[in-house]
Image 1 (tube, helix red, strand yellow):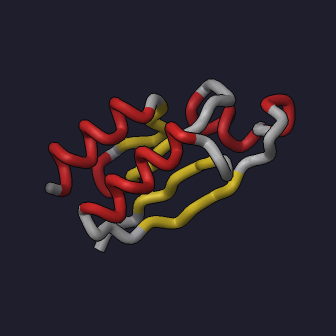
Image 2 (cartoon, helix red, strand yellow; image 1 turned 45 degrees about the horizontal axis):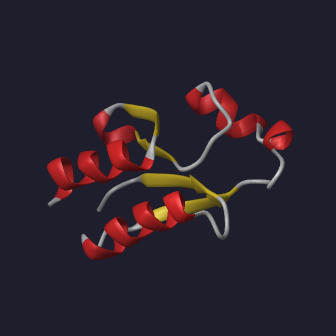
Length: 81
């Protein structure tokens, strides 16, 4: 069981890519839907230093705010596959 958290936006293809990988690996995660407006994404900015999504948090492995869907997918494959 993992404590994964994903900050995502509905309709975001990059977020969908990460969600698909999480589902493929049968990983449980907590989803945090972010506002559409970048200026309202203060929580994401505090965690990752930027306002883009997706952002993954994995406290079990010291990941505090990984951005970029390709990096997240690679991380998930290397850590949980």
